Structures are given as C-alpha cells and as structure tokens.
Length: 100
Image 1 (cartoon, rainbow, N blue to C red):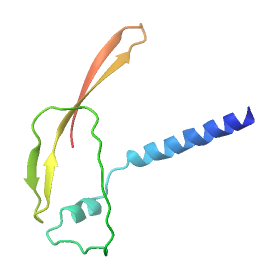
Image 2: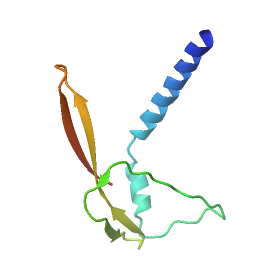
Image 3: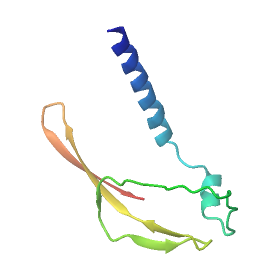
C-alpha cells in the first residue's frame, strides 16, 4: 500500500509540473527571434521533427501567411466543445474558439 501512495504522489507531481510549463507564454524575445528579418544561424547538422496535435474542429480554411523573414506560417481557427455539469445536475454545452 505504501508503494501505491508514493507512486500516485509522484505521478500527480509530474502532471502538475508539466501543466505549469504548458501554461507559460513565450517571451517577447522568443517571439521576435521567430519572426526576425535576418535568418538565424543553423546549429550544425542536427535534425529534429516537430509534431503538433490539434484537438478540436477547424472552423475555417487555414490562412497561410509569410513573416518578414520569408518564413511561412498558418493560422487556424480551432473550435472545441465541452460539456459542464452544473450544481443542480443539469448539463451545459460550452464552445470555445481559439486561433493558433
């Protein structure tokens, strides 16, 4: 029984740390570096793959744009639905829209 309790505490601690990092906003310097007019130096021959998973429905067609440094990017309007249970037992549907 002691192991289960210790394991659940570690698991919840890990989740709280990762959710705190997910809530962080990028700094102004990071945003400016992303859309800088001059291209950044390459860091050598390291390759990586970035993957993003969007949960929800795309409301409109993606809007493709080009930044000042000729780097392309896309804007997506994502809609998510959630159902909340009220104190009296009824359910209320909530729709959230976000542009990514």
